[in-house]
Image 1 (cartoon, rainbow over the protein chains, first blue to last red):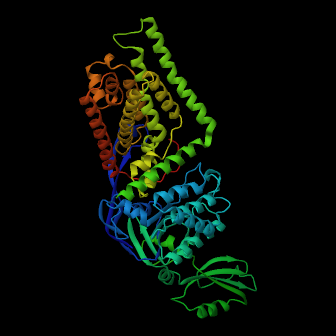
Image 2 (image 1 turned 30 degrees about the vertical axis):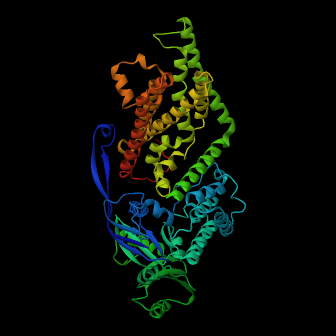
Length: 325
Length: 267
């Protein structure tokens, strides 16, 4: 569904001198926002496209959707060139940018939906059916007739997602779809995205800083940094590769504050210690055996290193496997 | 092809409808602004009426009826352009805030879509004022008024074209709101509203080129006095030329569009 080869985007930015000198002295500098990107996304895949701020995520999405013209490289989205075939592509994709609204602020969402119906040439009867489906899917009955400016952020975001679903797009580009939402609404949005993907085999290309979105929704993760893709693999593989490390909390019967362990302890608090083990290097039983020598263990808990820390480690270290998170 | 045109027109009409509905959300503000705009324009006519009264109804061959035309055609064109197609004057803001993204992502003609994205409801007063003063200037002649309406439509198209050309420059120059304001409100309107005869050669050259006041106001008024086929064709041709220029400049400039992630900041 998405095919990208050798994609590059160079911006020119002005570097100004600080203070009053900046009014008169500035120099232009080229800045490579996206560098030689190659990627392929298959129909029905849910792909997370993540990276730190300024990594090139939004620039890439904007080139994939035809907003920005690439400096060089090839892009095919649903078999179409986004720059040359903008209108044709617009019928087949849906885009949502969490920071921008496509709804009319002073009108109720139902009016925007009617306008979108005309925009995507949806026959009136079919539009009525689709609006009804969306209202039911997102529980919009109580808010669809209220002017958008009077809705909460969460209600507005749900209406935004409804709007981009009206023309049943084959590919959804979602840029921070859950930004600013509370956990209940986030879950609602995530469920809706999964439902859309399962029902219509919709391909979803998603950026988010919320790793909950990624864990809950995505099959595959692409990590970009400084305009370069540094990881592109299945989420399952990433977890297997990086989440071999676990935090083990051991609760002893006695106070262990004065005991010296011959193994690095992450945290120590009276009778509780937390250690981190790599299950590829040490078996759980060998570790337990070692720590049981220090005292009587009354409880034990093993938690994998959170995905958030794995991603953070990849951002800060590049694509080397994290050694010490 | 025909279906595509029909769908585009349907969308355009619906977009206008919702745009006006959105603007009328604040009805009292709409009424007050319209009344003040009519009063504002009305004061100029009162001023001219006093001037003509003290000069025995004529100044260098210019009569009060000529002034009525000068305050009808361009004001009505300006009013229609801003009321129905006010989105054109938002282009520079969209460029700087990344607001063009929404229109690029939609499957309709981008310029038409942009045009109906905003309705300047203060311009409703201008539109009504221009049309009423035009009716008075035509002395009740329906044929004369029909011609005036036709030239008003051409004037609206040229006015919109200038809005597009001036505002899209922000892709190249950045913040140009003040420049655009001076061009549209000071140059275009002033050159349209004052008699052609008072301007010198250089200003007349400007009116036929950079600031197309001659095609919005002066040449149509000349035709309303006495029809001339060559001037008529010239106005029609220049309407097409300005429209084409606006379309070409807009889409060529768009290649440099850099989008943006606007978060409200101190300007």
